[in-house]
Each structure stands twice: as structure tokens, then as C-alpha cells.
View (cartoon, rainbow, N blue to C red):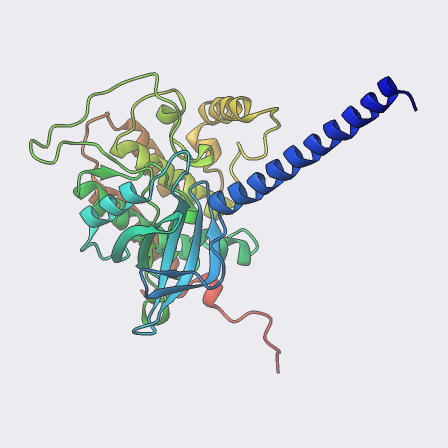
Length: 341
């Protein structure tokens, strides 16, 4: 081998060695980076020296929800976790909202907010399954009696939130959950990461009407005004509740499952279908009270205080016509597939 060939061969091996070294460093760096930004806290993760994670209860855009047990008292809690580098962190804000709502009979008790390693955490009382989970268990349709039991409790929760100067802005079956044990028949409202003040805490002045807002909340249940870019207020929470109730009665809404190539087109098609569907058509086959509810909620002006009593009376009177007892027996609590004698 002559000298030029020997030099080229040597240079080739040097380049290979450099590439391997760089690749190894990148791989190691990648593994370190993954460890630093991992969204999995691990089974043995203990928060604030007291709360040990157990089972993952659910996930969302913010992060994950786990059940946890206090190593001091053996009490069980729900813990929401989000990575400290989350693109849109919301747990600290949600903690502040929960603090504003403490004392409400349909609001879970919030315990603390903080940071542990790479995570923000929010600790609240643990509750049962969501209305959406029970809905799926019941093959995606509730009896009218069950819907009316839920409707009055949902309306009560929304009224309380509004009384504290807040709107929820993401009313959906997933954000209403049932209690546990002695409270298993009681409904609670959760997930306040999108909540917003609609009035000033001191002056009680209502926020101004604006347009050109992006859609906040879940498109399936969003109000028409939210779709067209209007600032949301109390009326929008109530309109969303109307869609939730129709969904629970009918099993589906007309704007579900529309084909779309992306989220923008999906939102546009849902908005168009929602505006094109008359309230009478939407509530076809349902009692007239559902039509009255949606007509009223859509008729409200931006700053108008809703007549919650009127809406509650609609459901209360209807409930009396379908049930002779006030006993809270939901579809999911009825015995199913029991052997017959």
C-alpha cells in the first residue's frame, strides 16, 4: 500500500470513529433528555413526602390523573400531574379556581398545589366515575328519569360556579362525576382549567363583549356563539348543558362523526350543522321541556343573569310526571342480567 492510499485509509477510520463518538453522545443525550422530560412519574413516585401514586385514572391534554394514598393517614386522593415544561401549564391556575369555589356542595375539596421533581401537582378529593363513563356502561343511552336526576344537579353546580363570578367553558359529561361510598348518588363538577371570570370580583362589572375569539371548550357541546368567535358568558355554559342533556337522552348529536380532514374543518362543519339544526329537530322525540330549555338559553343576552329557578322548575315538573318518587336510582345502579326464577 503506497503512502496516499495509507493516508486515505487512516482518514476513513478516523472519520468513522468520530461519527460513532458523535452518535453515542447524541444517543446518551437523547436518553438523558427523555428522562428529564418524561411524563411517566413511575409507580413509586411519592409527592410531598406523603402521597404515593397508585393507579392512573385518566389522561388529558394537561397531563394525567392518578389515585394516590396518604402514607400518613391511608386516605385516598386524586392527583393531577403536568410536566413543569408543559406547553400550556394550567394546574396552578386551576388550583386558584378551586380555592375560589371551596364551600360549594358539588365542588370537590382541593388540598394543595406544588412541584415534585419534574411535575406540578394538584391534590383533590377522589371521586367516582364520570357521567360519560356511566353513559358508555349503559350502552350510550340513559332513561329520561336518570337524565332529569342529573340535569337538576348539573344545573345546580353551574349556578354555584356562576355565583362565584366564574364560567366553566367546558361543560361536558366527562366533567361531571359521581361521588363515592355514602355520596355515590351525588354529582360533582370538575376540571376548571378553562374556567374564566365573567365579572370583576370587587366591582362586579361584567366583562365586555368581544368577537374574534378562538373556540374554547369541546366543540361537540360548545354554544353557537362560542363557535362564531364571541366572548363566552353564563349563557354559553347553559346552552352547552342543553346539548349534554340531549346527548344523554338521544345517545348522539346530529353533528357527531362529520368527516373532516383536520381540526379546523371539523370545527367549521360542527358549527354549520349546529346552526342549521333547529331546536325542534334537535329535540325530536324528547319532552317539550328540552325545547323550552334550549330556546331560553339561546335567547339570553351576553350580560343577562339567567333565571336558574325557571330552568330547574322545567326539569322538576317533568320529573314528577315520569316518577312518583324522589328516590335517586340511576340506570347504572339497577341490577343487570340477573338470573330469573
